[in-house]
Length: 123
Image (cartoon, rainbow, N blue to C red; front, side, top):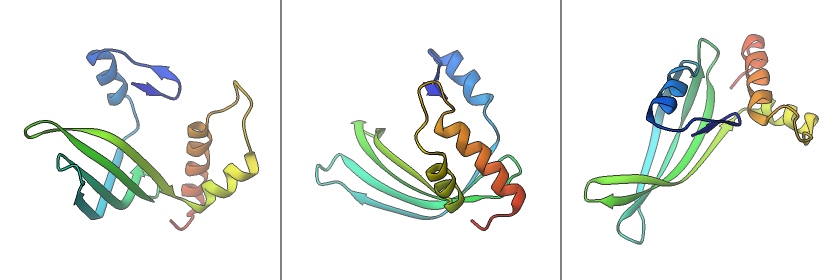
């Protein structure tokens, strides 16, 4: 698993990394599922809100494809996740591309996210 450029390998290391991440809550009132043409896969669309720690929630959209590995067992073949956060887009446009070794987009996002939550930005 890779998070913010740091690799975690093996079950214990991955579990330790996941347990060390900030508390996250999800609310997903919209879930649409459609079978794929192959018959052993499905496309899933999710729309909702994500809240990191006690900050204001942000709307998100996610589309992913589940493919059968064995009967009753699926794996995520493709996954697209998008935050619906206009302040993030404006700030990322203003920041522009980062040189190698510069702050990652995820670090920039969390800075913008926390600033937006403190300012009460409408999500």
